Structures are given as C-alpha cells and as structure tokens.
Amino acid sequence: MAPKSQEQRKASLVQPADTFFSSSNTWLWRFLPGLITGFALAKYLRVGAGSKGRRKKANNELEWSGPVPSAKEELRMMLCINMSLGMQKGKIAAQCAHAAVGVITDYKESKPQVFNQWERCGQAKIALKVPTEVELLHLLKAASEQCIPYYLVEDAGRTQIAAGSKTVLALGPWKKSVLDELTGHLKLL
Image (cartoon, rainbow, N blue to C red; front, side, top):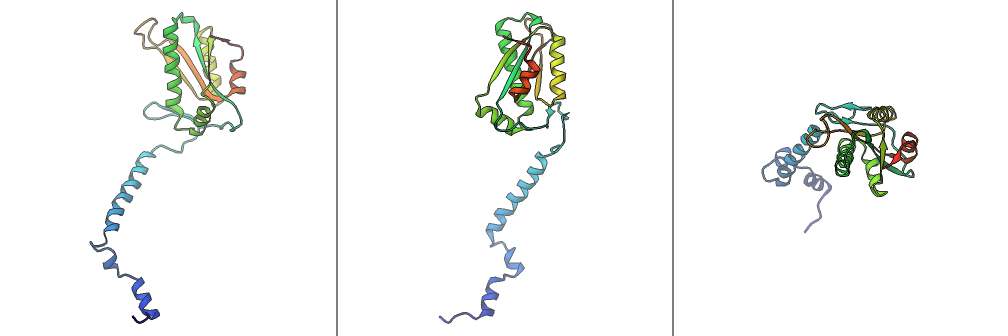
C-alpha cells in the first residue's frame, strides 16, 4: 500500500457537511436529544436561583443565604421549646421532630455545605426550655437578624393544644458560639 500524500490525509480528515449530519452518523442522533433535554431541564430547575438574602419563594418555602461557618467551627441545632403550653413528653418529641425536619427541608438546598458539615460532625441537637411564647418570638427575631437558619412550628390543634400555637423553634445548624450567645440563658430540657 502506497503512503498517502499530505493532500489525501487532509481530505480524509474533513468530512462534508452532508456526511456529518447524515442518518448514518448515529452517535450524533443519539447524543443531541440528550444534550438538548439536559440543557432544557437544567434551565427549568434553576428558575429562581441566585437570589441574595432571605425571602419567601412563590411556594412559601424560605430561601436563605448568609455567611457560611468555617469548617473548623462546631455546628449544632438548638430546639427551643415553648414551656408555657404545658405539652406532654410525647407532644414535645413530635414537635421537636417537626422543627428539625422543617429547618433542614427549608434550608438544605440553599446552604448544602453547612448541612454537610453538621452531618459529618454528628448532627448535634440541644433541647432548651423557653418560658414564654414572647421569648420564643424574640429568639426568632434575633436569629433572623443574624441570618441563622430557623423554623418555627405552629401546631395544627388536633390534640393537646390550640391551633396556631407556637410550640418549637429550631435554630441552626449554626456555629456553636453564636447559638450559645443567643440561647445561653435558657435551661436544658
């Protein structure tokens, strides 16, 4: 077999446009629909992304962005229980679970690195007694001002307490030092 000249090599590398888009070029016809579908899906799922601060989304979920704790800092979640309602132990446990799941559901997508760090550090949770609803709301306001993730549980009123009662406030996961400063005066449950 005779060696190809430089012109023959160039000609074999360049395909005419009608050959490239022909039906015999099956990899292209398998690749393009997936590429287009993936691009469209990514655009659709990112609607509303990129906002700053904390705001309500159209579906009433909270979106949060604020400073991120360093990887060296210990993170924990504080579960602040409204003791003025006189809830029984089982009710308190259920409301704490609602609060913990609620804060994770609302904020995990906004700050995944914070939640991943908290999960790696053992997911510390501290249950605290808050004497009154007024003090619970003061904690909520302070957390909001400091860009601390929070979730306030309002009871549905199906069992022990009135509908709309503010039962538990979950704060964090956030820096232990900041949460201790905010809740240091409260007693452990």
